[in-house]
Every structure is written in C-alpha cells, then in structure tokens.
Length: 148
Image (cartoon, rainbow, N blue to C red):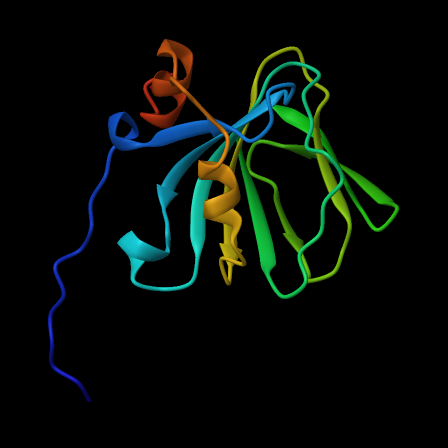
C-alpha cells in the first residue's frame, strides 16, 4: 500500500477554456481536464450543442468515449444504431465505432465527455477557435439552473 497524498486539481466553470473545433461547428467543447492537468492520458470536457447542433461523424482508434447528459435531449448514433438521450442518460462508445451526437431538443444539450486515452483529442480541441462560455453555459455548469 502506497501512503502518499496528492493535492487534487480543482477547477470551476470560469476556469474552463472552450473551443469550436471548426468554424462551422454547431457544438463547443469546454476543457475540464486534459492530460497535463490530470497527469494521465485522458480528456474530460463539457460538450455544448446549440439547438439542431451535432458532431460530425467521428471515430477513435484506441479511445473509449463516454457521454453523460447533463441537460437537454438528443439522439446518439453509433455504428448505425440510434438511441434517444436525455438528462441523466449515459452512452459508452467503444474504440473504432463511428458515432454522432445530435441535439434534437428546443434548448442547448450539455454532455460531460470523457475520453481515455486522450488520443490527441485535447490537441484537436485546442487547435480550434477559442470561444467564451456565456451566462447560460455558466449557469448550467455551475448547476445554478436547478431550482430546489
């Protein structure tokens, strides 16, 4: 048993850097943790889809990608199989599977996305155009949009 304590890395939504990978994209990715901050080959981000927004069809050779829907509703297609998704749902995409996530609702779709290993994902995100998170994004990511 190893008795060592690591100081955890702590961030809040105001710390996240957000990007559009390509100028015409209808989704944005806010980086939560990357391999440098996590000291591990993983990428954690929040993917934000505008109404009608979707990812281009994509696949990863080695990485497993997990999506957890934080808010909104949509459709996920993986290797020709389609399921509807809504807040609380999760989706696990195995390596080499061609997949698309699409917002089918009338509000933004927010997903937590985790990719292991990184497979140059964060580098692809950072190669895009930086964008700001707006008030709605910060409300959702700060969970202040929920009424108790």
